Length: 204
Ligand SMILES: [Zn+2]
Ligand SMILES: [Zn+2]
Ligand SMILES: [Zn+2]
Image (cartoon, rainbow, N blue to C red):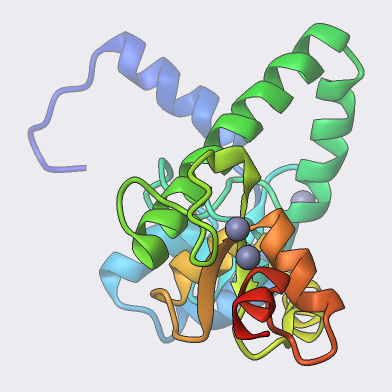
């Protein structure tokens, strides 16, 4: 506090209350504080560590990968770790009204991501690359090199908790993908030479 800076009685009371609730700095944080700049130190004391983050709910310091993304937060990460979020979501979902609302919001977000991916790979409005189907509910992402199963497994193993649409956006729309309708997608997968029956018919 600056010299000559007056603090009201209410302010003093707030500071006293804050001190009561503040958690003691752990041994691990103390070690980091030794090398931190003044700016970093302020955040470190509040529990924001470099490459790591403090979870208020389970009272543990965990690596940043253990926290899901949250753009509204100043550091871009959720305030609670993934494990704590899961527990929280379970209790939130135990009320049917909440669950219904959450599913609705999730679906809306998912549809927006899907639309962004579709527009990127097939133009606006999106359509099937084979038959021209333009109803978005019928469309999906097709792996041109037919390594879809392997790709999905890799996304799952990475534990980033993302779906294929988020993955494509995060990886800046890599090559090797096209938009097909489910019919053409399945038709291509089921035919021995991986050509949609639509196109096979034209060849014969
Ligand atoms: Zn936690
Ligand atoms: Zn199609
Ligand atoms: Zn087709």
